[in-house]
Image (cartoon, rainbow, N blue to C red; front, top):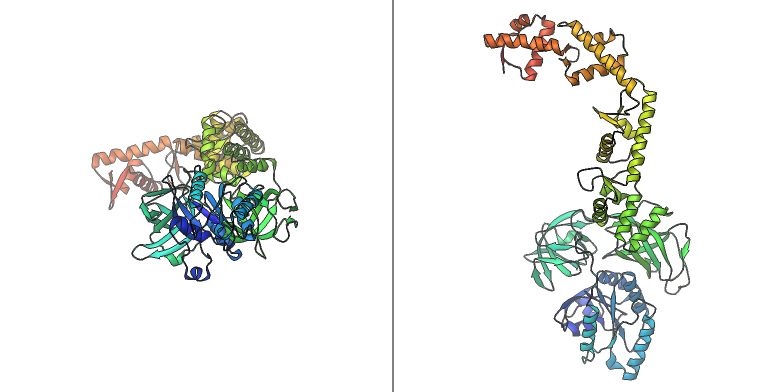
Length: 634
């Protein structure tokens, strides 16, 4: 992508028309006034056979916002400076925008050389070279051109081709992300959006999400440079025909992305640079200053809060800052933004997004500083290691990323690589579902042991602590799946005992287990003694010389173990007694083929009080089936 930049009336649009044969000024007002108001687009054929998309941006100070939108995502800037005018205010402002947005390459077109003599052209080249020396574009080629007579155009094309040899691309493997700069309707096709694809690949029939609306649409067709293609990769200018959306519902400034790939955020941590304000370059930038934030093709207002107690920044200085937005943006790590003063509106700074979803704070911990350092240096491995170190408990990749304020896609591959390299442990069979360092795992297992010892001391008759209670006390914010995985790992190594939803310490629950076993023996003996006519459960347990709560737990354990059979809420038989009753019923039904409730009652030697709930229980269990007043074996 090639994008123009420069002061108004320095010949940007004329030069693009001379180079491409396309007039980028589309609007009648643009042609009438002779200035560019909206972004214009064209296709440039290079001498080596390659082609570039061209974005022609406005130069008037009132349209700097459109210039920022046009500069987003370009590979080479074509800075136009009129030979008869020299460097002007918007030249400086556009140059600052290019630097803040990280545009990697620049070629200077010294336009309108037909209006000056050769000596003046050389003088202006020296002036421009000196001005660029203090910028990232020092040493950029400067080519004198005339759009009227064609002088210098071949040399300019060669310079552009050289600058475009090594374009900087977003990560090709990422999900698709594209800021929308135009929305329109084509008769017979429907809604079309255009923009420069920041990352990923878009294919026909892909489903995409439109932000901030949250609407999803499918790609009907794709064009690059006016030609239909099946797919488009990162760095290309594309036109995408969308289905099931109206052009009137979308706007320039909206964002197109793979579903779920982008989360809107109302704040982000950034490396913020202050370039100074025109007419007041010496005035420092104060923390909390209200500004306009331009990201992609959208601009919103917000405040810049400098980190670690810093009160202000001088011109040319930079530091970490948190940007608080009045409206959310689809910002992600690595994105560039430009800050403009609130009023009057001037470009004053900008920088790069580091953490896109941080917590609200301006004082950084040591880990948070290390994380921002790694993000600023594009050290993905450092980001992963620091994000993991910030976790105090086992967590999923999604939680690790969210707590660090970065996208899961940024750290997923690195974290899984650390797992494969045994630099951390995975507590789940699902890759990335529950990760922890050995130190974190050891600390959390020790915390569980200490909590269980305390519980057993306070509750000597309890054989174990309910899992939900342990989670609430020690790990209230841990993901449930990670908590279960942590318990399984602790049980695997013999540090805890897991049984029936309770957790116990292997060395401290002995007395309680002995008491529990004694209660179970007492309850079972009472049931066996009661035989075929047991009292209601509450009365049975109340008659025992044991702790009432312990007896209830004991009865539950007997039921789970199969030694007791609960018929309903108040009736329970010992297993041996129940088996005799069921055998008696089966014997009658096998010989007679069917029997009434009265006949079955007599066969089992029960009164109606006990027989009816028992027969209904056998119906529910599928032992018998009822047909009117008669029951048969199923």
